[in-house]
Image 1 (tube, one colour):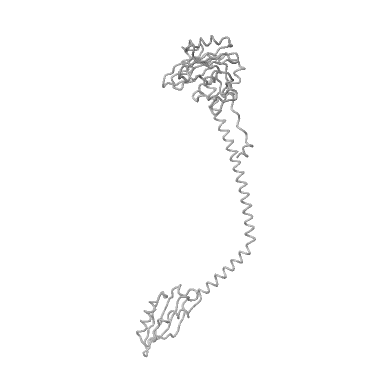
Image 2 (image 1 turned 45 degrees about the vertical axis):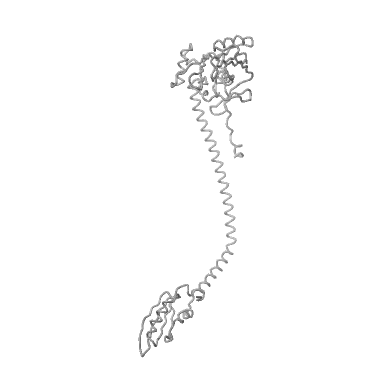
Length: 374
């Protein structure tokens, strides 16, 4: 299969992830009611927080693991230029640049701080929470860090001596599978984005995202169909080659059969002759052997007059007996022999003190085999 795959078109690379500038978004953490759809609650919260209707916003949300709260972020669409949003159409995900930092939280309660590209991003965390209790993104440099931290601690109710984790690096998101994304520090993977965040993290229009998902499903099936067709063609080529090889092998065997046909014919003729000789040796008439079988039981008064074979196993004996009782005794003696299948006495006549009779005998097939060997 490795030889075949080099001729197949390679799968297209996953589309990139676009991280929109986080200072364009306002961020709030809202409570969620259990059992109600999350999307509907997020839309209701947006209508109460934003001065613009949701149709004029780029918005998204990240639900907490316990389902009791969500981090909601939104930005007015006019804050982004057309040059910024043109690249969004082909992206796998469009989300604020602070989203990758959400998986880099401190061990306990504290603040995560990152300064990059002229912006400060600070996230305040409570103990045991998987979402920040407050998040601030502000344009500025190191000179504004102290004021930003004080403001964030006041909003989150954190102590001044709490843990501060400063992040350095180029944290980006990359698609690592179908609907899966991971945080990378340059080319080094750091952590995976929770699967429950993928659907709500994208800030693009929901109708556009639904169309993208349908197109992705269609493209996936088209790609699988292409691979299936290539596999079918490879299988057909393999079967064709196999059929050609089998035909060549069959042709060679047929040629050998034709070459050896005269030798086989001679062997068949010799076998037929041997079978015929064996048949003739076993199926020939054997009257003397038959007499040798029936003679020992013959009484002295019984004299054979004439013997006639009836087929290979039949014998007809014309005899005379001086003592009439010897006729029945001889017949009974023959019937007791294990070599005879049947014994019949007929045409019994008495004249001038001599009894004439005919014995019709039928021998068993095995008695006379191989020259009458008993």
